[in-house]
Image (tube, one colour):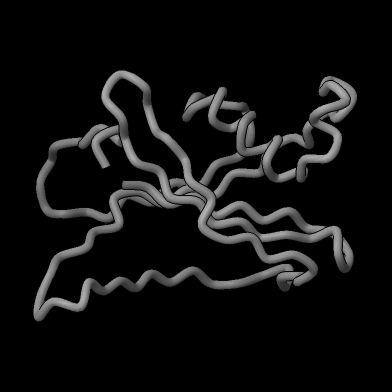
Length: 127
């Protein structure tokens, strides 16, 4: 499974934070499901990232296999039809990211792959 967090900066009601969960489907890539969207809350210009998880069981193992930060270009809303004009900007950006997949967009990207002690480079598509 994967989690995608998308933040659109802006002033006041223009800002939004969306959280999506992706499940890998055989032959189709990832199917993304919107879990939550928060609008009108601005994030500070700097911050720290932390990860936490639980299942409720006595013990379980959760691994952060990859961590990436990417800016993406604004979506050209003129390229959408009239039926798309009422949709949220983050919905259109999610679709654009799904179409692009994980290919290199030329934007600066920060990737973090925690070392697990072995020399094998795991494929990101298996997480």
